[in-house]
Length: 103
Image (cartoon, rainbow, N blue to C red):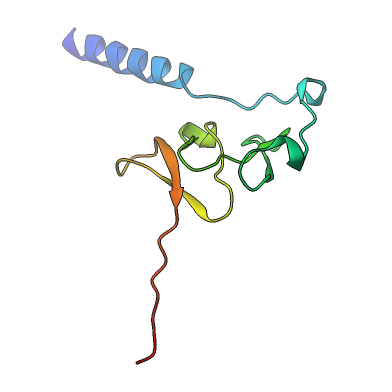
């Protein structure tokens, strides 16, 4: 009896977890026309995570990444810095470069 309950509980949790995962459904008729001049920052246009519509790249301080990248992509020179080791929403921050100077 207990093993049946545990199995049902685990199956329920797995099912509920699957419901929260975003899915790509592409209808190009719903895409807005986006031009570089409409975008803040460097004016960069990128594809959405589903590769369906174009959108403005995220600028410094904006949310990015997230589950399957649905929170967006950072513009060049920025990286999506996430708070922990698991894939989650992050914030676009300047990339850190190591400078090696010859002495």
